[in-house]
Image (cartoon, rainbow, N blue to C red):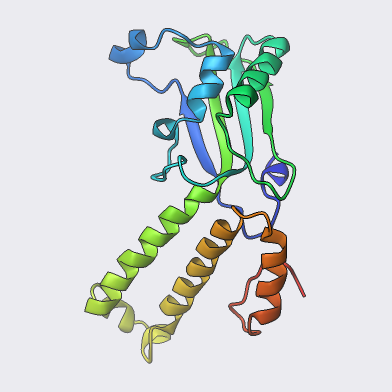
Amino acid sequence: MLASLIPTPRCHFLMTGYTPLTLDSQTTTIRKTTVLDVMRRLLHTKNIMVSCSTRKGVYISILNIIQGEVDPTQVHKSLQRIRERKLAKFINWGPASIQVALSRQSPYVQHAHKVNGLMMANHTAICQLFDRSIKQYDKLRSKNAFLENYRQEPMFEKNLDEFDDAKEVLASLSEEYKAAETEDYINWGLLAESEAPTSMYSDRRVGP
């Protein structure tokens, strides 16, 4: 299931989305739960359970798990409408589309809606989360905040290089996701591999 969502080993950080996600008091506010409405809402940023805006960047892959009594013809029509409206922007350097899996609702659980949707997506906007983490780390590192407890551990007595190395790995992941938005992403990976120094922390997309 996940293999088709991860085209390269390093770009394996997936986002999840679910709809309709409501409280009991809000159940009546969502009236339309057709296949098209569910698949369209799954692409909305507000329904994604990661603090990243999918309005920027592109999708690398999408898997929608639609739960309920669904006719496969409805799925095909919904996919066609989404393509016509260009609601999802995909990468240019490889084949990408919305994959759909159908699932039945449990007869032992009461459902307020006829159709529910779960999305697992690989989107380049995840780099926003990485960049925020790096900025927050830099602020803590510059003030040596919350680091004294680590220095009391044997492995951090001499230095905190492991934290800095982890930051470099995270920064390279952010760069790779940003590069995945371009058409020459595959060439970028080959160039990065040839220019990167060999070390225990090198983790480039293309192997030697």
